[in-house]
Length: 155
Image (cartoon, rainbow, N blue to C red; front, side):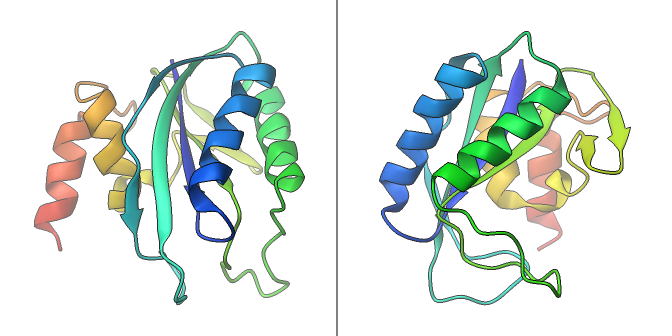
């Protein structure tokens, strides 16, 4: 099971998430599980526009590299613009992150699975732990629930 993080803080946020899921279902694989949607403040930059975040579990036979290209195309189709030249985060119609895929580890310059920052982001850990509480991070060797609780205690 591949888990994808979805976020939107520009435009019709709910529709952006729904449309993302439909396109993922069409192009990546069967969406087996969806977390509840949560509203969060932007992470890594300032904006007056809060995010809606959600995590979905997808069953796919595609390679991680194929899925990355497909999700980037979905982001563009739904109006996502790239980071500014300075590399600073900005508001997005949709952001799709490959978070974790069972016990797979991918370490390439353009793709890392598990996502290297997921254990620091409550907007990822909260919904992920709600749908896959016992899933173990293959590098940190902790469950999603334990990572979420640890992250909450560090606040």
